[in-house]
Image (spheres, rainbow, N blue to C red):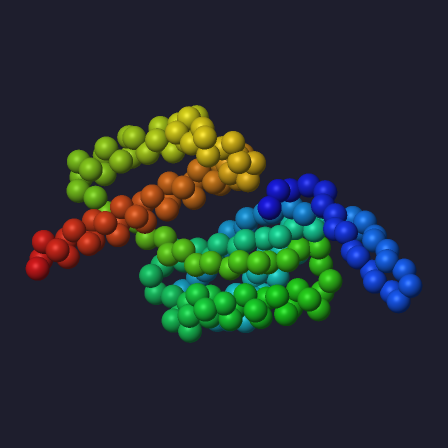
Length: 187
């Protein structure tokens, strides 16, 4: 969906009259926020933290928000993890937001476990030397020229957070591939 002003036509059919009404919709903005999880965090602490995060944004116009919950420690409350992954935490948050009549709506709540990527010394040195260049805005924009013709992707990569997230996601994929390769070698 493109950002900007939108409208709908509403067709009203009465016994004698057929009328159409052009109704402008409020401008929508899409935002992405990050929230850090702590070991042993409970559902109520998550919801309170997310409410505080949203309240600190002071949105004046309607925002549709994606919140990424980041766990830097592998010891995460299993019940909380399941609630985030199954959408239960999102439903509870949406219930709270409906009661408050705010100008934001959270449409997605996702979980990312961030643990350090372990390479051999030589690979680690190479990764640290090349990652900043590979994930620079110039390099990503050059590689994705055709994709960035779509407004959404271009807008998404207008802030540094997107490049950091791209690097993190790449590290997660590398870690998974490395682990899979090690598992195959053990067999």
